[in-house]
Image (cartoon, rainbow, N blue to C red; front, top):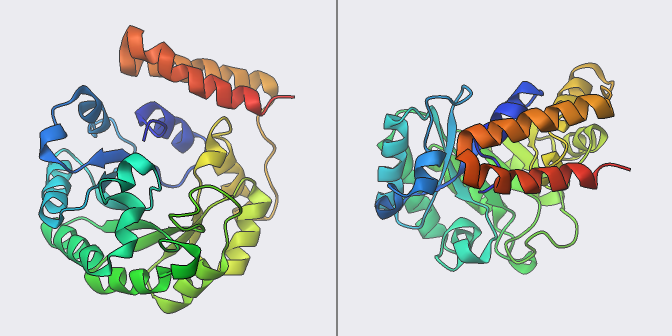
Length: 274
């Protein structure tokens, strides 16, 4: 949330991402009419297939949230059980759900039954290093009808500390038949190739590494297709992309929010410059 808005998704898709997913949308119906939620549920201009991520902890609210977003044009519903943010986990949502397998199953079955589009799931490897239950969650998900699974290689307790581990993802891949996508610390085309080799996953999902480098998605796709990593855009091309993105943010958010939101994208871009 707060990063993968429509302008950023459009940019990543244009630069080679195979699928882009919306910002996390709260399933609480009381929040649907806020300005923030209205911006996040503008699916008419979305890149197809339109994948919308929902979050919450109540099976019926989640089911209704899925129906609501499908009515607005979502073509895939993605359930977030991977976010480690304290403000999300304090509400027993995101990765906090991984500690309650019966509730996970109830939510997944309710959402799958509520819509006639594919439902996907994002998780972590478990609540904590001593309780990695990713394989169990994956089996529950497959039995509930989840179409595909993305797994971040850290636990909820780890947040983004330390390094992602891929053995649990490999175990999940071996345990289920649905497509599994590996996520976590994949910051180059070569790393993506190595993670796929290690895990046997169907693909990779890129998160933080695309901040300031949205062309990374295309570099990964190019290497996986040909064995050769395409060059990054020249500095001149990167600056042109950044200028266009800042203009897109201004057009999307307006005079007040647009420049403020653009600041972080400019900051990420500058972090990767010599």
